[in-house]
Image (cartoon, rainbow, N blue to C red; front, side, top):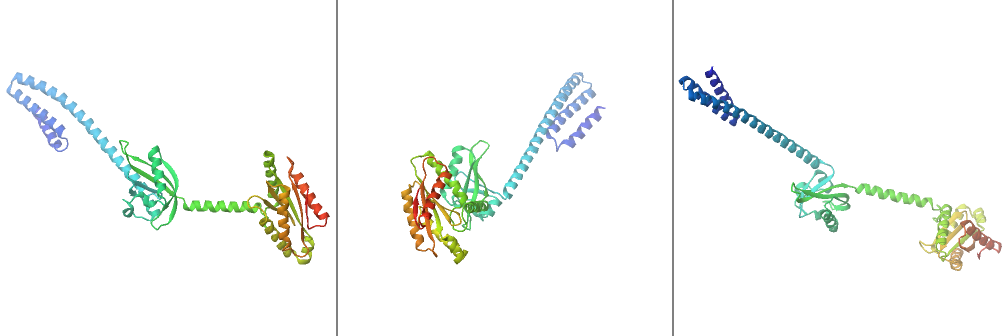
Length: 378
């Protein structure tokens, strides 16, 4: 029986000699003790036999403890290897995503030289990885001050910084980027470079600007008289309320109103036709605009052949000077028997817009009543 046990252990040794060295060494020791014990039994040496038995027991306990310890170490090593492979796979996965992303992603070292340039960056800038790596980041900026500003902001705050910045492509085209820059750190929290991510918003900004222009155009059309190019009646009622509101807040200011009507305009339309009438209206609109202060006075066509001008910070005597210029210029191009009747008034205190318009209309009626082609003040 002991002989079979020993041969069994030797067989195990042969199987383990190339795979588990520590386990194999333990088996060698254990088998050796078994052989000594077997020999002692055969030789009938009692002392050796007892010693060998104790040794077998101690060695067996040590053997199984050692085997368990080695197994736990092996298990930990295998888990470490598995985690390492997983982290490597994750790193490769994210590296693949970043490299193949259509967004602009590139990195620079602490000296400002480009280290990596992904596919999205190559597509937008026109540089290959080999062409751009090692070049200074400044070479991509239209304005070098933009580069210094954003890098300093990142290093000063330690946070990601976002800016809309124009940059230059290999073909010398200018593209507008929504750019984000942040620090890259190693496992010791030392800064090893900066990472840049960006989106090309050139077309988006172009469309936004076009939309703004179209909205401005629509807004302007909504307040403009299509025939003369002056402001329309709706805008007049909005603006006179605003001017009177300013006057209430600053009583020392002045506001005057000029009301203009073309005399014998209906006769002109009936004899020379509506096309001639429209031309007269357009010409008068140009004259009124020419005789006023740009970006201060506000001219309006409120309907038919009636025009109104708001003159902020102007009293009625100063308004009369502007009206005389308008009338003089019109007489040099007057068509048929047309002339201008003009009424002028000045805002009084905190009166409402209806009262101010009514007094200007009364002044205009006075000019009509007195024979037309004149200026009256109320």
